[in-house]
Length: 92
Image (cartoon, rainbow, N blue to C red):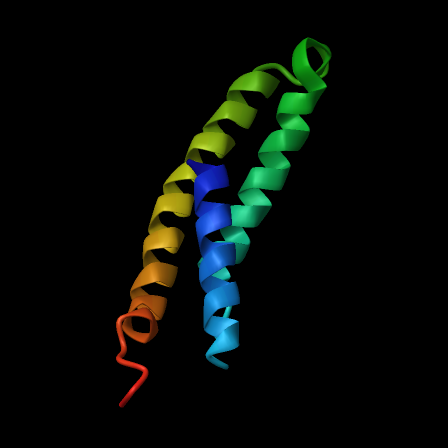
């Protein structure tokens, strides 16, 4: 889900760039990226991380699910913002 959103939003940005339309990055999208990267840090520690910090893996999974929810919301937000340019008639 996260990977699909990234590919679709990147494609939308490329398409809109050709139309000279800018879609700014939202603060919520930056929080999503931060949650993803922090969750990966916890999850990469694996079982060794659980010995240092109890529930390390559970924290990583919770952050990953949180970022997945933000992924859905921010992906919808980007497509809602860009859809009006995609559906516009170029002859107008």
